[in-house]
Length: 190
Image (cartoon, rainbow, N blue to C red; front, side):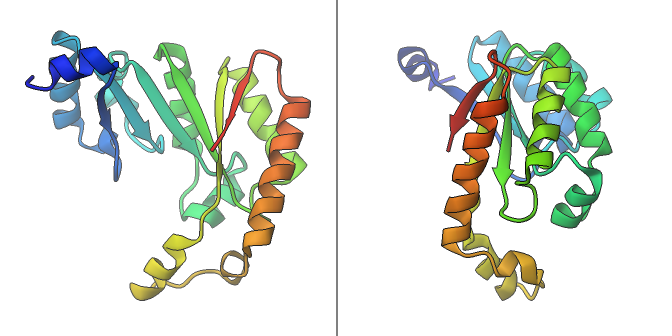
């Protein structure tokens, strides 16, 4: 409440992120309702792997929702993250139906989810769900050392990714998406 004047002056607000905020359903529901009553803008950053029935009403209150997608193909998603994406894609449909401002973010992982087929699947999914905002994220390797320090194994195809591969894959993906996207889709590079 003490920051409300600052938020009003700057157009800012509160972003719920980190881990998966939508898994903390009781806290998320209470907080977003209170912020909404106080007219404080809210955003949610999510990987989409949550129970939409438990947070459904609260999802409508967010001013903006960012949904991170790793891969559209189930097997590729499983390989990249260790889980399937059925629930995530289902929640994408829920979010696209209720969110006032849904932004899909797609991380380009060289050799993993950057083929023309992968990108066509992404574009088809966005079109099917009437999503008009896509942020394309560039892969970074800084997390690889952290996982190694924790004793976690990194697959060879991920650990072998070079900076040159990252740059080349990112540029090619952006070019492909720009050439093939629906004209209503706003594409942002990050």
